Amino acid sequence: MSASSPPSAASVEIAPSILAADFRRLGEQVQDALAAGVRRLHVDVMDGHFVPNISMGPLVVEALRPLAEKARAVIEVHLMITEPDRYLPDFARAGARAMTVHAEACPHLHRTVEAIRGLAAQPGVALNPATPLVALEEILPQIDVALLMSVNPGFGGQTFIPATVDKVARLRALLRARGLERIAIEVDGGVGPENMAALVAAGMTIAVAGTSVFGAGASVGERIRVLRAACAAAPPRVRPRSAVRGSRR
Ligand code: DX5
Ligand code: ZN
Image (cartoon, rainbow, N blue to C red; front, side, top):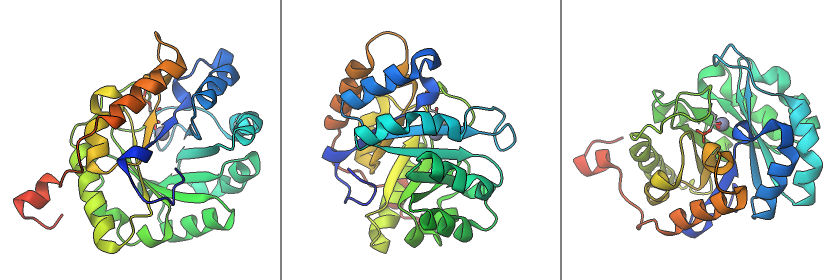
């Protein structure tokens, strides 16, 4: 599924976060994911300012580019950095075809999103767990991906924040009301077989999965199959709890 496809529980995309991969054999692990049918690779970029951790940059995107292109997969960069505008051209040159910035890090979000579009990449906007959905309202028509963090960004392997499920459902309702269901809803942090079905039922269309794809134990391919099976087990779409209670959002 591309970011512009209409949402459907059957077409939920799994985007492995390479932050959780074994960096000594990153290429091999990414190949395993691509061989299992993955078509979206999630690269977490951290600067030690916006988040308290430092991770990777355009060189890693450039290294993965030939693998991604051969499989016709999209590399998306999740920019957990202050002043992302300074680095957008570098990531585009390196091969990123989707770029997600944080609303909290962008005082001129519209300009930043236009810059991403101008670089022929899919623009995405991410919200931290405590940032309300209203921060997305004005920018929605300009973006392809809305990313809801389900952990506080900065580290892989954290515990999923359960309130995210209702936030996804409220965003799904908002997209429906605005006629913007082409926008992908991506969820990032602590996503695994145990919460996948609830997220799909709420309206998620892209699941970022780090530890649940690259963690110890089963093979990458097997773990991806388990995640897909959990998606398939999702019940029909659910309404947000707040809508049931009767509040607006
Ligand atoms: C957190 C990152 C996530 C993280 C996901 O700041 O944005 O992409 O790597 O990893 P897991 O799935 O292990 O929570
Ligand atoms: Zn991420």
